[in-house]
Image (cartoon, rainbow, N blue to C red; front, side):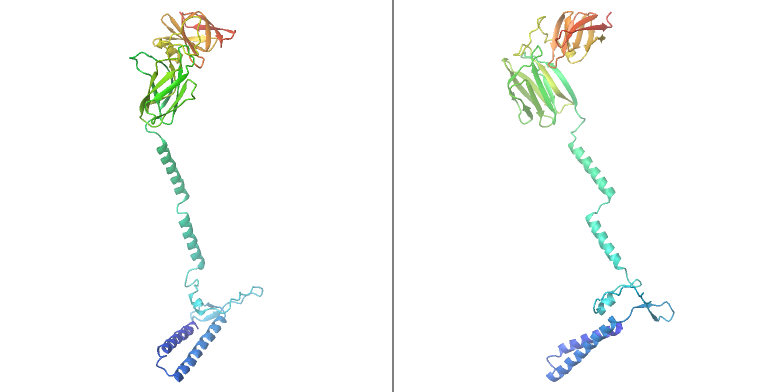
Length: 362
């Protein structure tokens, strides 16, 4: 049946083409006869299309004579097929069957897979690997070159003589260093003004009234100097600033010789500011070639060097009498006194007496 329809369609198209080609050369009477003939062919095509739409479904038989057998009847309760009107014969020719073409579902699956591959081209394992590489790249970009700097807290004696070497403050990019100025009694010495050699390399913050400068290096491997004028002191304190060192000074206590405006006068004697050994004791560094003693009874460290006893404590020693003392702003004291097995001290200046016993004295 389909072959007949195709033959009729082709023959109709040929007749229609021949009529158009000979339209100008054909007389009116002949043209009318050809028009009638064309209408008959089109009516026949329409009739054949209607007959195809009403043909029952058939299935291919597996017998040797290749005859067609009708499809099995539908159940009585089965829903009737939807009415879709007349079916286009060309539509019947292009529909795929399991024996001659692919399923329509495969086409939709291929389209869905194409959309997924376009929107999500990477697998979950590839996404995890990509994020790991991104984190490693960010960490490498943020890590400064070399090993991380070692933090340090130091106390430095300032020498104001003309040929003395200025103290050095080690800085680092991304780190803040506090520089604290104090007098020989360990009290704060207020700052009056300051000036820096390279303002673009270092950032300095000051509250306009205190004794502390907060300094931060803006980049690696920069150097400059700083001049600080203390209240009541005519000589400026010169400081060298270096960045990009192996160690960074988190806090630097600059002990300036002399009595500042907030100095505390000591009745037993004058503080010793030129004694580097006493400064090491104040920083918790044992004197060279000294012997460490065990202290019982309170928080105290003791070292014996020849005929001198050095103590580091936050207690106020009252007996025996000390020869020299050096104080820190956090309340720590460094004493030099004669060796004695028992030390009497007051806790934070109170009346409570604490007895310290030294073990290891000969």
